Length: 152
Image 1: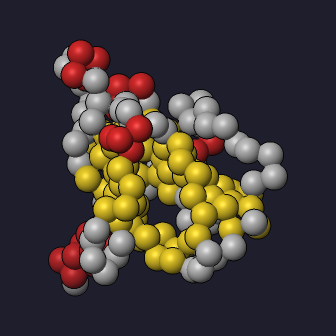
Image 2 (image 1 turned 30 degrees about the horizontal axis):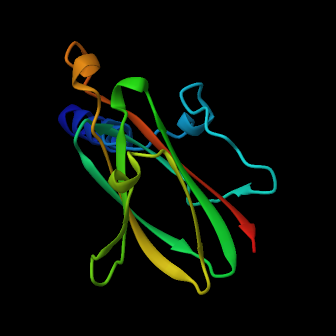
């Protein structure tokens, strides 16, 4: 009986700990001092804003729905060692890239708008400055994507 009791306790602890061990989100990162993004007047935070815990050169893809007749501002933030952040906007069905911030020297914010509702893959990767990240102990940290919107 004691054996089964120990097994049930271990299973309970394991089930409780799994979400914490595999957590990939950084829930309060967009409000941290590392995210000094310009919150625009007249724009509201969009519920699909996200922060994720990643390693340098890991590619992250988020499926975002942008509603028609709205303007959006996408802004990225992270710790200094993770900049620049390369981000792209892709069509989900064809995977065709219709924007890549490499063309704009890795700008951190982009304003977009769509006439009709559109699903978009936002793909990003922290490239990082090799001179700064070479001495870094923890090669993982958070990247935040703040999405703001307003009606057109």
